[in-house]
Picture 1 (cartoon, rainbow, N blue to C red):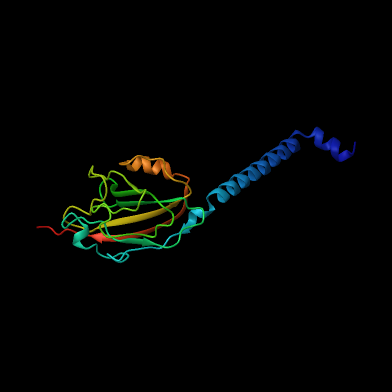
Picture 2 (cartoon, one colour):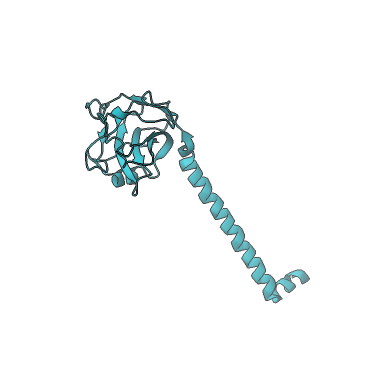
Length: 201
């Protein structure tokens, strides 16, 4: 046995430092492996979809016919080609300016080759074959147009999700059910934001 080996065995401080260093390195390695696995599984989740509408522009005012002050038609929406892993698409429209997050529209199980929804698709019953709609925060099925209280403008976010699976959801699913179903299954996402303001009378 070399003098250095005898010194290491006889010095408890050196042994503790050495053991701590080994534990630290093992922890770093484990963290790196977990990150790599997560990155591999969800790397495509950062794919961005370009969402557009012929009904209004990004950050623009939502016309009256798409709101509760008009016919409450769902606006036209379109998006670009989705990632290769896409098995279905989902859409969520929400108002983050409401006192409690308010959901205006839930759409799910759109076929991966669908690239747009026509104006009034929800109200007029012309959703693509196989697509389902959930209950909004008004307590109704399908689209519910912007209907903020008079005062400051509210923002309405249309989120489009590309998912790596079909969702096992019934017609009329809730926001919570949809959020749970898409968790860890998003391979692409995009959004469009519109604004609507109701003036005080």
